[in-house]
Image (cartoon, rainbow, N blue to C red; front, top):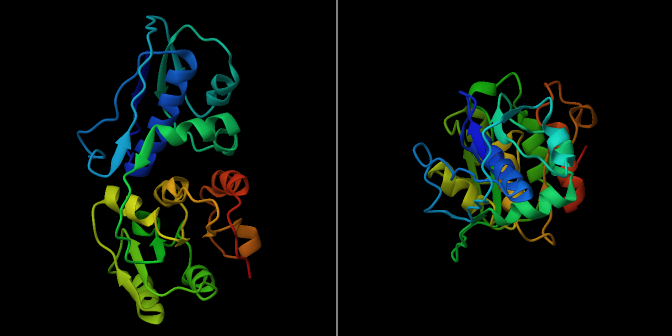
Length: 250
């Protein structure tokens, strides 16, 4: 069996990433697994969830966290109950693993939207990370000004923030408000995307299925010369490189 003890500070992006990992291990080791927790987030309206549940159930347990998860990723056989606990599992070695990145695409998929009104979607992560791990106004401005688009949308966990309002006014971006689940679903189906750091933004790009489309995302903090703390830099870049996303750096 595989069980998840989600971190107390877990939000939608982290929930999905940890769940994808649990499903991968369930299939890899043919383990009984848990369904995605529906008490806090309702993905069924916006995503097709292909729940995998194996056959094996063990009493002896092994705790998997950020320190030892890579050992489990490379292990061929394990006959223990896996408990994912004490980690967010956002390591570059996980998503740069081609077997993992290919398999997890099937576990959760956004439901297709036939009427996408915007060809550009900008996601701005602020909230509790503003002034510590958030990307500055110049990052979004530099990305957007290099993109040709007809109609753009902007979404954020802080739509009333001055940074978001300024971007909206300067580039005529429409405020996009909806449930977190629908935002990921909708944004991932737009043709051009500007992403910020963090797991929520990562998943928008992760679920975007057309590799011929160019995606715009932050590269390393050092290359962009922004005085901010790195956040999911390697995690993003390891997957960006494999998907062929385009990165703009001034």
